[in-house]
Length: 219
Image (cartoon, rainbow, N blue to C red; front, side, top):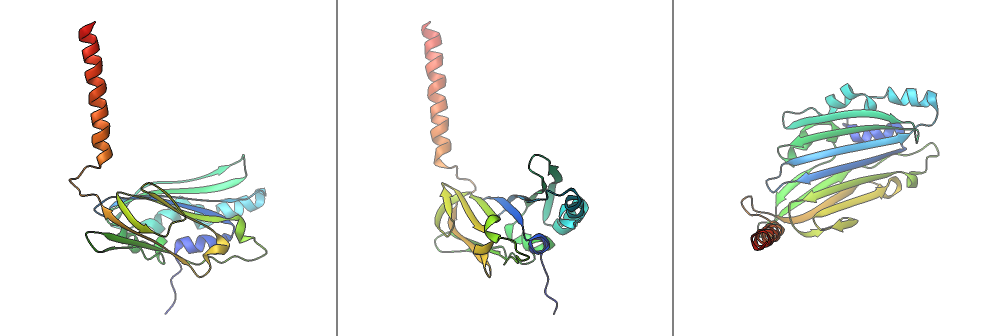
């Protein structure tokens, strides 16, 4: 059987010198949105023209790779930045279930999974496929970065960095090896439950309003 090569893997196979960022927001019901941004340096004008003709920088080709009945494409943008001689692609999508991302060609090898865990917990994983570099390219100079904002209480994770409910996995291309798996266990906020900080903020606003009303009445 012929092995399917995902669009994201193809990005690296064709270039081997490209940076990739993926930002994802996961809601308690498993739906969410994603923004993908990848770019590469092409200082030579002839090389820049050749690279811009690759499917990974052509909006119609990108749309074909991300089309799915379960995914809504919000924006596809490609552009060149003359200040640093780079060419970029940005894709923004919404999904009804993060598992449904497996139905689009762009993520043929990413293996998104959101399963039930213990005590109303959820276990999310995503596979980062191996990246091929060569032709004297230094993989340590290029990176992949995955940023996940989780609407829930995070229990365990293997991220390289955490800022409250935002987890970040970042690796240079040499660190990926045969592939890596993103993993996080969390307890989703209840759909009818408001995070405590909302109440604190509402209380603070109420205090400020009462203070100004009392001051105005006193004057």
